Amino acid sequence: MRSSNPVFSRRGFSRDNGSAGFNAQPQAGGPVAGNPYAQGAANPYATNPYAPEAQLGTGPEAPVRANAMTIDDVVSRTAMTLGTVVLTAVLSWVLLPVDSANIGKSYGIAIGAALIAIVLSLVQAFKSKPVPALILAYAAFEGVFLGVISSAVTTYVSAGAVPQAVLGTMAVFAGVLIAYKMRWIRVNRRFYGFVMAAGLGFVLLMAVNLLFAVIGGGDGLGFRSGGLGILFGVIGVILGACFLALDFKQVEDGLAYGAPREESWMAAFGLTMTLVWIYLEMLRLVSLITGND
Image 1 (cartoon, one colour):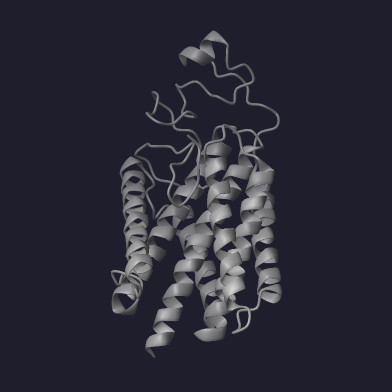
Image 2 (cartoon, rainbow, N blue to C red):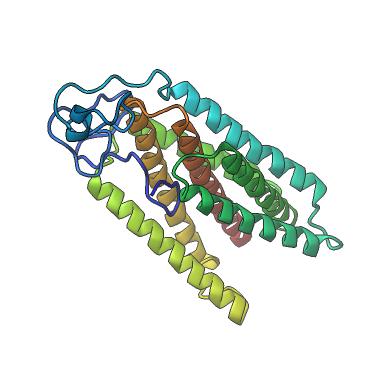
């Protein structure tokens, strides 16, 4: 199953034991378990995937399609998706004010938009191919949610929280990108398994905390408030950084093994989900730290 961050598994993730880095070439040798693009395994993006040599992984590899994904495709699709998030966030901030007269309506729309975004992301996750309309619709509804939440934090917590969260998100992205390109991060099977297990555990724990908060009121189990909330906020940002490394590896594999151009939409989808995750954790972290000052 193909999917993206922060809960789902990656398609095209190379589970080898090598270092990760941009512009890396396919490694020579036998098939690599779990990697459909590895040399020695059938290339699903070959011109003729039904040729005997392609099916058996023997003989010369078939030529890659002419419409293979490029880094420019990934950048442009990601810009479109993130641009949609930012645009709808700004519109919701302006059109859905979080004041005493409209707070209930604004929060209701934000929660509804978040639920729709989750449903759309799940639908895309189970699709065999990326659907640009679904991905852009997800980005639009996610932006509505982010706009209302950001407006509420600015109004009731700190006027500088949103710029700080944005800068923090950009810093994490740049830091992980540099570390990945310099091969300071080893994205292998062990890293993948650890990140996915930790991410799933984090999401389940936060879901339980939310459930207790809804049933019993207050802060639930206290994982999202006070000193414990700051700790879990830091953990959330670190997990987001780890998922970014997986996103970069997904892009690298697609480029190295000739993924079709449409796969750039999946790369953009994964990067957008990860950056939204990091921004929300940064916003919560800044809010908690500012509130404790």
